[in-house]
Length: 110
Image (cartoon, rainbow, N blue to C red; front, side):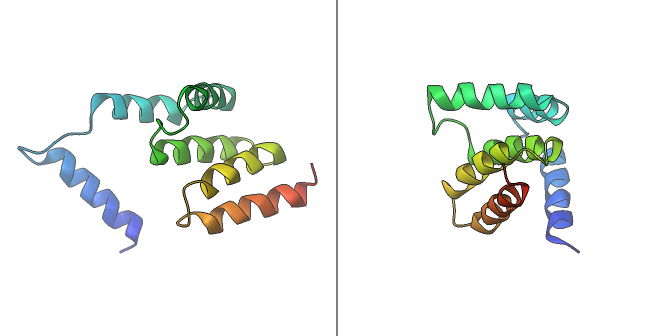
C-alpha cells in the first residue's frame, strides 16, 4: 500500500469516527473551491493573503494552491520560480521539488 493510499484511508476513517474532530468547514470549503478555481483566481487570492500576512496561510494550503496553478500553467517559467521560492521558504522537506520547478523554469528559458 502506498503512503498516499494509507493517508487516504486515514482521512476516510477520521471523518467517520464518532467523537472526533471533523474537517473544519472553512478547510473543506477552501479545498472544494480551490480544486476547480481558475489559475488567475488562485494566484490572486494567494498574492492578496500573503501581502496581508505572509505567514498566515497554512503551508499545506500554499503548497496545494501553487501545485494546482502550476499544473494548469506548466509552461509559465515565472510562476514556476515563484512556486519554487515559496517551497524553499518552508523546506527542507520540499527542496527537491523546488529545485525541479527551478530546473523546469530554466529549461523554459523565460
